[in-house]
Amino acid sequence: MNFDIGNPSYGLVFWTLIAFLLLLLLLRKFAWKPIMEAIGEREKSIEDALTSAEKAKEEMARLTSENEQLLKEARAERDVILKEAKVLKDQIVADAKTLAQTEGAKLIEQAKKEIDDQKKRALAEVKDQVSSLSLEIAKKVLQKEFEDDKKQEALVADLLKDVKLN
Image 1: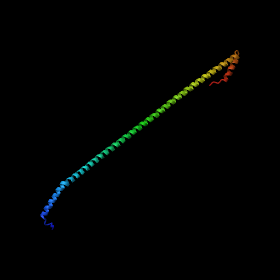
Image 2: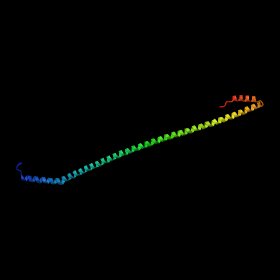
Image 3: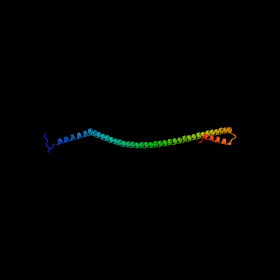
């Protein structure tokens, strides 16, 4: 067979065209449709995957934002709790100081009262002793020299020199 490009054989062109059309129909019926369906499914799955990825990205962004918000709230709450704890600590310290000062003042007042009571008792004892001594002096003076006034005065003066009062 001799192929001349300038002079084609019409029979060969006809049968080549029919074979090509048959091949095209067969490919269209059996191959083109499944290939296009597979490409369409693949395209749809890629689109779904992209949509899912976009949704996941949005969800991650939302969760990250939510996380940051929760962290901010937790920090704010921590700060509030720390401030409340500091205020409470300061109040407890102030109350303890006030209580200590009050108790100290009560103890000081009790001690002063006790000192005053002991001082009064001591003064009362001194007065009792002075009165006892005075009575003894008077008794001795009266016994010894009841009649002589000068001797009585000298005796009283002599006895009073021995007694010292604060």
